[in-house]
Image (tube, rainbow, N blue to C red; front, top):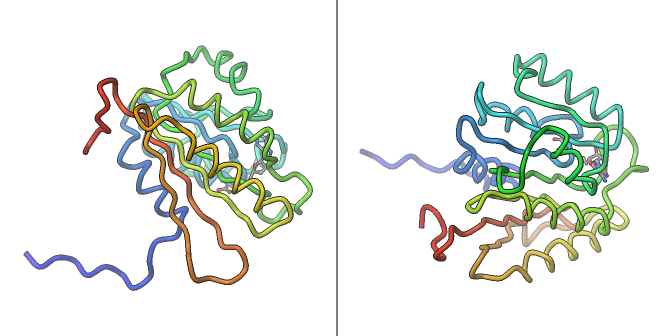
Length: 208
Ligand code: SAH
């Protein structure tokens, strides 16, 4: 069989994040969208977890909660999604309120920066982002996945991206694999993906 020709464009960081998530999130799984925004990632996760799975989507902006709910409902996936109006830094209380327990989260998705179309006043901040990433790690299944798309282009975004990269780089290699993917030759601070995958006890990364 002839191998399929790759399309000309390399995938964007958000597309790579979705490809990685599709390889990890199985029907029945639990997943968290830590920055629901307009709900694109929430809908994607809701498709992956299937009817028996659940997605918890968090955002501090009521507009984002409403937009995500509407997008999930119009996709017919609202029944699998729980929306929370609150900060991802309060991860423990949001997940515990759903009856979830540490170790149950197959995947956590972060898409940093500001809500597209809603002004840049309520952006994610390094201090709270790092708290949330630590909590995500604590609640992650042993072979779970965290994806973080960072946007260094807005004020504060470069520092936040560096903080995320530094956090991922500091994870113990015996417990986690961390990688980054982004454009090298685009002007004006292009976005990049940081991905973290847990290793099963014994050290093997699933699928490798
Ligand atoms: N993934 C979204 C885009 C996310 S934009 C999409 O596909 O459309 C980043 C979002 O993070 C914004 O909606 C913003 O309100 C939210 N946010 C900022 N700080 C937050 C916090 N501390 N906790 C949860 N969400 C936060």
